[in-house]
Picture 1 (cartoon, helix red, strand yellow):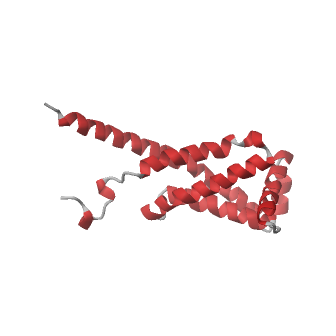
Picture 2 (picture 1 turned 45 degrees about the vertical axis):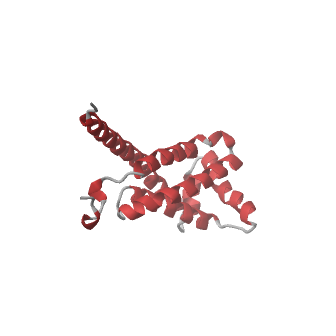
Picture 3 (picture 1 turned 135 degrees about the vertical axis):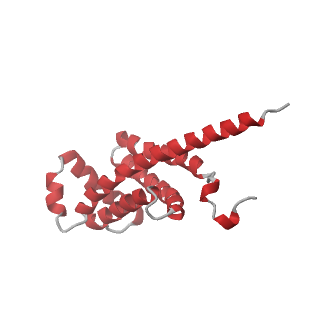
Length: 164
C-alpha cells in the first residue's frame, strides 16, 4: 500500500525550499539597487565628478562598456545614456523581483534579467575576461529562480480559477 502522507510531506518540504531559494535570489538581486543608484549618478549632470571619485580600474572598465556595444551596433553611445540604461535595468529589475510591481512583472523580470546579464557577460568578456564570475553568478541565480517560478502556489491563483 502506498502512503500518500509521505508525498504530501515531501511536497511541503519542496515548497518551503523553493520559497527559501526564491527569497535568497531576491536578496541577491536586491544588491542591484545600490549599484543602480551608482549607475544613475553616472547618468546625471554630475557624472564627471562621480567618475573622478572612482578608482582608476573601475573607471576604465565602466567607460569601456559603452565602447563594447558601439562596436556591436556601429553607432556611438554616450556614457550618460548607457549608464541611464544600466541604472534603470538594475533598479527596476530589483524592485520587480522584490514584488513591488506585482507578480506579473516579477515573472516578466526573469527574461529581462537574463538578457541583461547575458549582455553583461559579453561586456565583461570583451573588457576583461577575468571578471566573468560576477555576471555568471547572476545567470546561475536566474536559472535557479526560474525553477522556483515554474510552480505557483494555489494561493497565487485568482479565486475563480482555483481547482475544486
